[in-house]
Image (cartoon, rainbow, N blue to C red; front, side, top):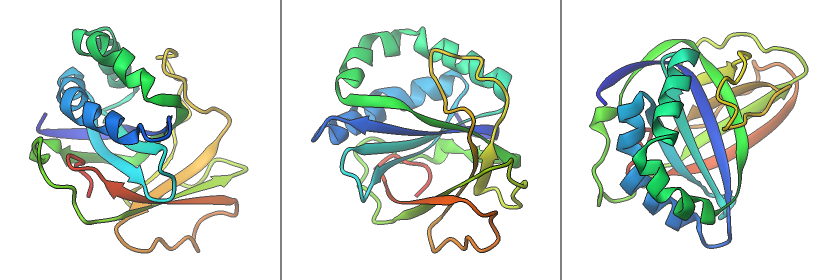
Length: 199
């Protein structure tokens, strides 16, 4: 996929069996990126959590909720997932820690510029902040900050967390949370994988 306007984003955090994270990443980057993008998704980033050796984090974007459902139905009913799903599932303990989010306005991503297989792992770190509040948060003003998407998850085979009010922000530098509403804050230090578009 080349340029794509993205409005809806999933933040997906998978718990892997001890020692299995790199196996999942290798499989994901070899088999799952291009077929998902051919189905209509944008694979925005894949990361190792630097503070949790058994957590794989990734971001997947869509034009809108309708496009999300179509892309997921196409990929998860298709031949690539059928062939490799058992191998992927064997690496994971849990895969339902998912926040469904939306951009403040559509942002264009050119994932066609992704590094090819065999590329070195970038020596960079992405800082990510998740701020949970008791009420819907205000709309952020930058494309690297997302808020909860309250539309119904119309692909229930892949559950998302509900009853959550969240702002998610990321940066390659420190994140200032002084302007965010009060609430519980979670921070992650993420290392992009070799083929991550965000790096």
